[in-house]
Length: 398
Ligand SMILES: Cc1cc2nc3c(=O)[nH]c(=O)nc-3n(C[C@H](O)[C@H](O)[C@H](O)COP(=O)(O)OP(=O)(O)OC[C@H]3O[C@@H](n4cnc5c(N)ncnc54)[C@H](O)[C@@H]3O)c2cc1C
Image 1: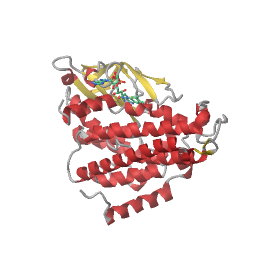
Image 2: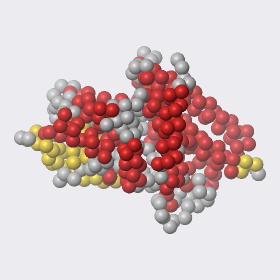
Image 3: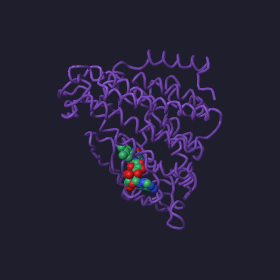
Image 4: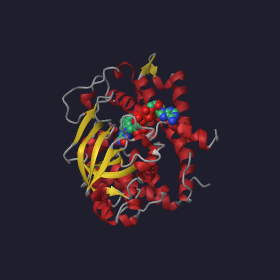
């Protein structure tokens, strides 16, 4: 298997770099590099810049207005955008709902929603999880009862990322209690401004309210908002999850994190010498770098296999576990390197234009914020424990 880039792929990488040099606003680059809080307007601005270049539908085929890129091109794009400190592409409409509509949506739904996702007219959020239905997603209890040409929806979704910004939510709802739990689930598109939808923020340990509860009380949803067939939602939900888990290894994020760690360890002192020269700390950094290099190679092997038409199997689970463990270890070492200045966590100082002063060097606050925020990595997108179960069943056949 050839893991080196072809001349064409190298030329593509240069094209992406030139685009980022030219078009990524410095304000955004600085915010991402400095770990500042991004606003809805920041994400929308970056999406619009990418869309203008035709590079927003990274995973979409050309017929739907996407790039039509193969797995290697997508990987190069992700690597370069991360390295350049571009904001991430918000995945809910683009990487989750979009592919589901392309495969299972009606022509009317495709014609209506897909261009609106690219143009930034609709901000989507994901209404899968509920209290009691996370890893065990088939237990969803939110009900949708058909009444004429509407469904009446009642229930509660939770952990809804950036739901406070969303115009619409795609939900798994229970339309039948017959048979196995998976057989009574449907996939419904709901306007967030419908009467009966209430968003309540959940503040996490980093002081951020990036997730929410979404309460649905007698919400009237037109039947044309059903995707595919009633009670077949489990199939669409699983298909969406395979797209949710793209770029799961997060190699670019880990590389950027490691570079930052090395920089900080070069600036911080231990016993009068730079921390990076401390054998104990240097050994920990070396170990995480070795792990990262091994994972990056595994990731490239998976990408090469995908480019050759092989669907990734349990490798996704391996990459999810290794990727998140490595990123969390880098976060922990960075926080350790920052030392006592990691303690006074003044989260307000992360807001652009805030007059609250952070304590300590400018890298201390983002290091603590990343440490707290990235606790989520091993939970969402299928928790690491659940990924281990998948590996034990499919690879080890236990
Ligand atoms: C920051 C964040 C953002 C999120 N964003 C969204 C979103 O936008 N939309 C959305 O729908 N959901 C979202 N989620 C929800 C996420 O998908 C769930 O948290 C996740 O699936 C785990 O479910 P749970 O929280 O209900 O935990 P549970 O499923 O109750 O798990 C609790 C513990 O038990 C372990 N466990 C569970 N089942 C097994 C098993 N079979 N074998 C071994 N161990 C097991 C888990 O690993 C975990 O440690 C988000 C979560 C977080 C933390």
